[in-house]
Length: 385
Image (cartoon, rainbow, N blue to C red; front, side, top):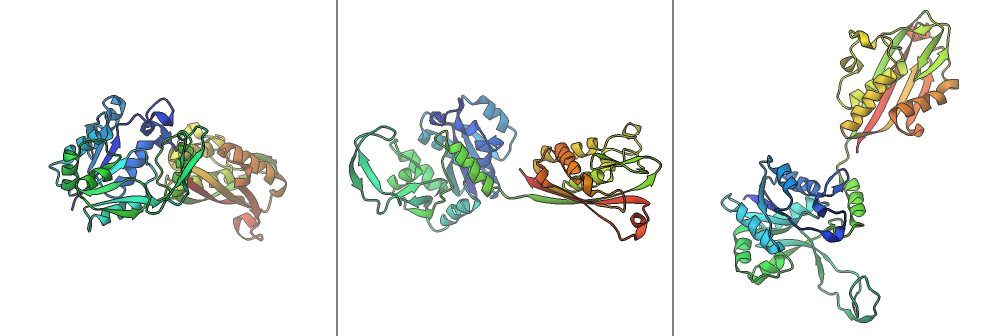
């Protein structure tokens, strides 16, 4: 069986404010419609009729090259938009269709699957939440001061959600014969005699209607978006040579020798930089700043670290924390660790509490124990933003 989705995105959504239809407004860095479409695409549904208003030319242009989408114009009423979308899906071998509101961007993969599976045994299925609050009748509509005139029995009452699923031919025929004025597609289906199975709804599957709904939807998406955590490690070594100071994690420390390297030889900063590149699977400093390039001779390592941090953010990640260990006998790092922590945090543009700088000796073993140089190990954790 072939399942298609029909996303209704032709409404104006004036109550949501913002000056533009709510489906085109930004939500957690993307348009509302982008979250809605992704939910269905991630379920493998690649036959999607997207119903747009003729007024939204920019939207038509933005989707024109996506072969997974079938664009069609909406009408003055929702029922007309749905009918246009159904007609656009005809002749494509569709047996099931899930009709969904673009303004419900928090729909979960589990809910989509549940409605789809229910259609294996029923001609129609839709998610809903049982009404649990007390219901009143009142003398005035919502938003105005009035009085309670009575109560309403909530037994057997449900709050409807989408996607509402149907056997394609059945809902196509039901819409063709309906006189109009239906609240949703379930009402159209029932008017045609179709039995509609109720699938347990999801409280987070909210419909953006008012301005405050954007903040709630963003919080839901933040918790429901698949977590992507990256870890990277870095290791660097520089030998001692003539000089009177060393630069470690951006701080110059007086010493009887200096570290030797193509740049300023900041072994700690180099290790952290490589840890970030590693978490991003983007190689190491040498890939981005080749030592064969004379422009990096003596360069401040801050350039490298800032580049890695900016790359992380451009790829959609935030730096959660970094941990750097300096291995040396001298100089003593402890007195300078706080300044190093602050400088690294400044360059990375994160809070100092997310930067760890510490040191250890190698018990006079190896090249660090013989004070021939300094080694550094670092770990960076990145989280998809």
